[in-house]
Amino acid sequence: MRAAVVQLLGPVVLVVAAALLGTLVSHSTETYFINALVNVAIVVALYLFIGNSGVLSFGHISFVALGAWTAGVLSVPASEKPAIMPHLAGFLQDTTVGNVPSLAVAAAVGGVYALLFGLPLMRLSGLAAGIATFALLEITHNVLRYWEKIGPGVTTFSAVPETTGLVQAAAAAAIAVVVAWAYQHSRFGRLLRATREDPAAARAVGVSVYRQRLVAFVLSGALAGFAGALYVHLLPLNTETVYLDLTFITLAMLVIGGATSLWGAVVGALAVSGVDSFLAEAENGVHVAGWTLDFPAGTRVVVVGALMALVLILRPSGLTGGRELAFPRRTRI
Amino acid sequence: MIAAILGVDWQTLANAVGLGSVYALMAVGIGLVFGVLRLVNFAYGQLVMAGAFALALSSDWGWPLWAGIVLCFAVVIALSLLMDRIVFRPLRGHSPAVMLVATFAVAFLLQSIALLWFGALGKIATSLAFLNQPVTIGGVDIRKITFVSTGTAAVCLVALVLLLNRTNVGLHMRAAAMDFQTARLLGVRANRVIAAAVLISGVLAAIVAVMLTVQTPLVTPDFALRDTIVVLAGVVVGGMNRLVSATLGGFAIGFASGLLGGALPTDQSQYLPSFLFAAVILVLLIRPGGLFSRTGQSAVERV
Image (cartoon, rainbow over all chains, first blue to last red; front, top):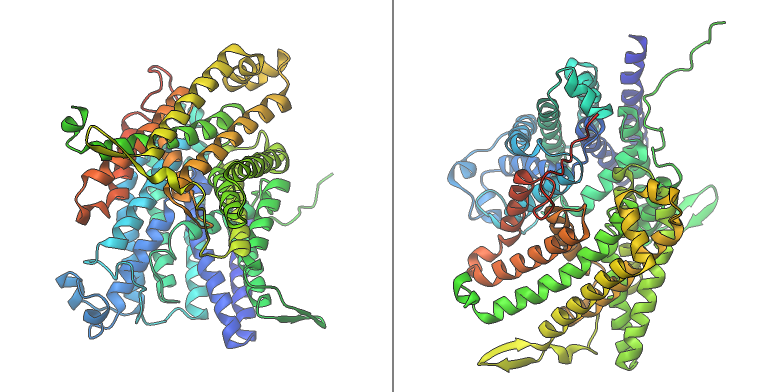
């Protein structure tokens, strides 16, 4: 019991600490912290499926994209819709909802979409599952890009109210952490982890690998949709923002943190976001302990890429080793 | 006749075959390394990109064509051996997920280096542009590059089959692809056989770089990225466990996308990736082990 509480508190404390740190800095730097917290929500959603099932998914950013589209289309003021999205379908043109309802609807849409694709896809495992989820990403990206009845198409999503502030981002990241924690301590989570450790043995004791994976896929799809809604309320997006680069960077965050633990997911998301933001600032010149750092533009991506590769080569099981946070126990003699 | 059955013109068919052959070569490059290392090399496209930049730069500098091609081969082969030494070797034996994400990181790194170095607008490789001129055969215009790439692919595949079946290195590679542990126990040298596979896959990447720069002379940092994604899908759809099925998968997806691109009306061709990847999902659901893999090979582990 105590161990389970520590496993929840660790990530939550980290999220709260990041948010508190964000209140101390200037307004322009605050955006980095909000962005990092949204990244935590996305990576925790990825973790819920990938970490617990051991199946690699490249498709989760499609849920993020769909969530962003849903929340974005629903919360652009009705008066501005015809100008930004002239081809929008009728009922979407008339419906406008507030911030919190748009998050909830985005989560629901993400979950339903994950169910729709999960029903066939969860029968696959290994490389076939990886490629099939990649195919899902490609299809979603392609359709969102060209189907102007459901969104702005290739143009950037503007006029979405920017309601994702520090408080909302921190609360949402904490919600994602709590959901993932509750799931992994539930019966479903334990059964899925059993199938990850040994699929054949899990099957032999009557666990349906397909059903357990589907449950996790839908739940993490809903979380990813939710995170996507946060994202669209943070900054103007287009289809390229929620595509390959985001897929790579969030997967890298998960693997760098340690893919098999919630603690690892949160640590990885915050650590990579932190380094990334620091370097982005350093490209504009930053003062650290009396030194002035001024990197040429473009160094950020090179350094982040190199760091990612380095961590993966030197510590393939991630910074946390894929273990949950635990206090050292007193050993009994 | 074949063209009439498929409902497309000969030009589309020829282009589809050309694209299929280039993709088949990429599929072999990815499949060879997967065979010995169980590693899906996502950074393969960046090898091709590096080669393409070598060609573009050498045409910028006014080098003769042969020198540009030599530079392209040198750069790509050096880079692929370096990648093996620095990245693949420390990761040997780790889980496929970690290795795949590591090659992602390498791909990302190489792409951002190219971005920093050459800028997002890229460079233009003009030295091979003459291959885009058409040849007229029986009233049909077919670009020279189609013949060149199909011919090169055929020669490469024949050479590879001979290498794999008639030489010691080939025997070792086949043995390692079947069961690496046992092959090592029987005296196959791990480093040597892996280096051979990486070297051949590098040579193929250089050839692909030359072919692709003819088709797309504008070389940008994301050059060949889309092609790599499509080829990876094709390789898995074909069946990753055997080189033959992987190659066929690569050819099939190139052929299919060339054909669909030519056959679909313009207002639908923007949805081409959706059709292509929906087909990928469908094939994977029906035959998860691969379209061209032998039946009876179950992917499920038995205890």
